[in-house]
Image 1 (cartoon, one colour):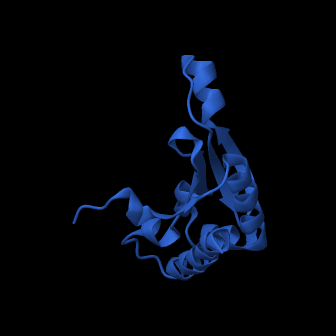
Image 2 (cartoon, rainbow, N blue to C red):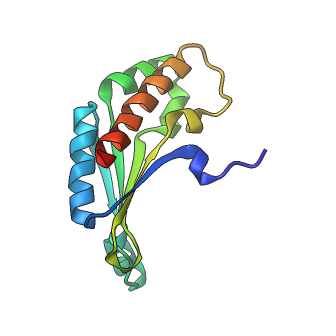
Image 3 (cartoon, one colour):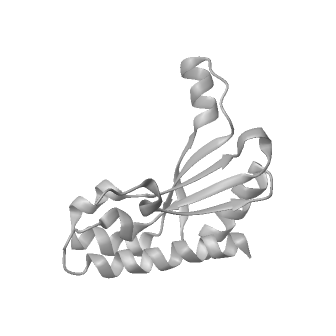
Length: 136
């Protein structure tokens, strides 16, 4: 079975500016116990490395410490999937913004480690709530 990127993400489109989408996303993540531990500004990176103009686009590494410690003590290799990536980008022509949140259940796939699915399920529920908050 061929998987698509949609199998790994919860995506919402917002009729707002990039800045507003980013602010609302960070607030919704915080409500669910996630903090931003990494940030990549793709626009600045493309400008600096390639001298190319790119849309406003951020990759945010979100971490819920309680979930992370449960996952890492269950299976140290799960660190390959952490932190939970969240992307916020300006749609073409500045007509809105897209927010995509990684789906931990999609990322985990068929991995069968006792206790890990429960953590991924809780993370999924919290991140799905982030998407719901953004569309409310």
